[in-house]
Amino acid sequence: MVSAEVILRRGTPHDAEYTFKHALVRDAAYSTLLRSRRRQIHARVAMTVENLFPEVVTAHPTVLAHHCAEAGLAEKAVAFRLKAGQQAPARSAMLEAEESYRQGLAMLNTLPESPERDTGELELCSALVRVLQQTRGFPRRRRSRQARASESSPRRSETFACLFDRLDFLRVQRAFSLSSEVHLILRPSNT
Image (cartoon, rainbow, N blue to C red; front, top):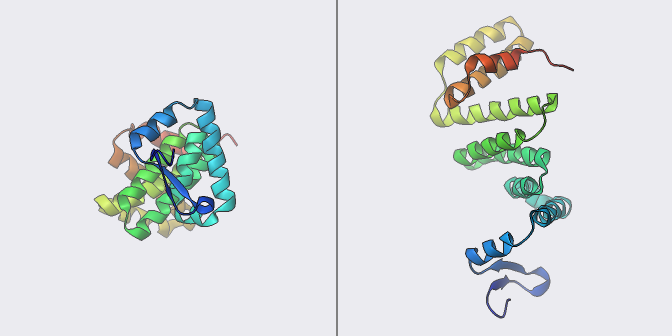
C-alpha cells in the first residue's frame, strides 16, 4: 500500500508513522470493519497509549477520550474529556474546553444513574459554567448570593456555589426546566 501511495510513511520503518493519503480511503477502510472489531482496536489503542506513552496522555487527553469513547469505555472517556477541558484554558482554547465538557456530559449520560455519575455531572457542569462565564459573562447576581452564602458557613458556601453554578449553567443552556433540575440537585441521595 505504501508503494501504491495509498498509505504514506513518515520516518524509518521501526519508528514510522503511517497515514492514508486520502481521508475518503481511510473512511472507506474504517467503515468495512465490524463495529465489535472497531471497539477492540480503539480499546487496544487507548490501553497502549495509556500504558506506554504517558506523555501523550498528559499532553493530548482528547486523543484518549476519543479512543475510549469509541471503545465503549464511557467512564474513562468522561475522565479524559474533563482533563482535556481543564487543560484547554491554559492555551486560551475556551471553545475547545466547552466542547470537551459538553462531550463529557453527553458520554456521562450513557452511564447508569449512580452517586458517582451525579458527582461527575456536577463537576463537568460546574467546569462548563466557569468556561461559559469567561466566554459569555458572569452574572452579577450570582456574586452577591455567593458572598452572602459564604458569610454563613464554608460548607454551605460550597453547596451554594455548586448549586449556583448549576443554576447558571441551566440559565445559559435553557434546555431544562429549572424547577425539576433544582429538585434533582436537592433530592436526598439513596446512599
